[in-house]
Image: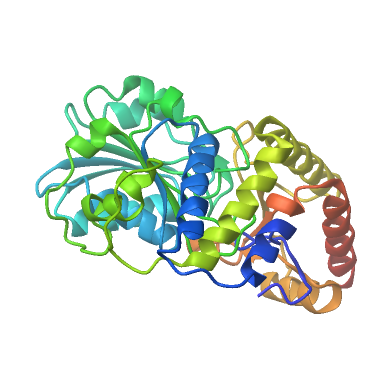
Length: 364
């Protein structure tokens, strides 16, 4: 997938060397004691990057979209009121998944490019079972205030998408009142797509659906597979064949992040994003996400009038080996998404993408 190219879109970033090397190691059996040790350590490290002490914190054997589905199918009972903050594509997807679980969905719509209006979301229904929101909206490059939602959630469960935030910007699930959270490996964690880092606290687990509509994503069954859902030394029962190489790769990526230090990693992403955004504006380009809520790891920029969005993206890839993403939804041709995630969140990558984009725009 990397093909010796630089990836600056919203998808996979270049994996850390540790994550890549782990994929090349001899394969372990999914019940091998060495693999179980790696799984235990991986769950421990995921607790750190999530900012949680939740025992049930584990890498689900599927991508972040399955993490979203697991979050809803395990906690939404038919008829439950689920308030969803929608300020981009992935908030929209939340409404779809919740509705398929039989929820009464209350969608709180926002203009794309704007952060979630906490007061509107909290006042959308007097007693929802779940409040759901995206922390870092991948389609728009916007960060929303999850801590404020957690502070005002009342008896509702707070369900959070952290796919683009985990390992890149501050994330404190326990302090912020996040009850259920899911993420992905391919963004700031710098690991190939294929796993969904997931966490659920005791409060949410006690309210779970007894027999979810998905057998594969039934957290009650998955818990036994990873030792009471990641608790070191817990009794294990067979559920499915885990993707051992992917878990080992995630272990490598998380080890690299924690060796650097979370605060340092967050600061590195912030510096790279700030520098990129300043450089884009110096070029005369207009940023899309609302000022004050822009993600450092994913920058959205408006395509200049008269410029062929797809043509520029193609030229960047073919001439400079740089891939940036198109926009989403109605902004598919009018916005670019530039990701500086994981290993790519560094000064030389910023200079590279700015120089390449300026070159291609001069030729457009």
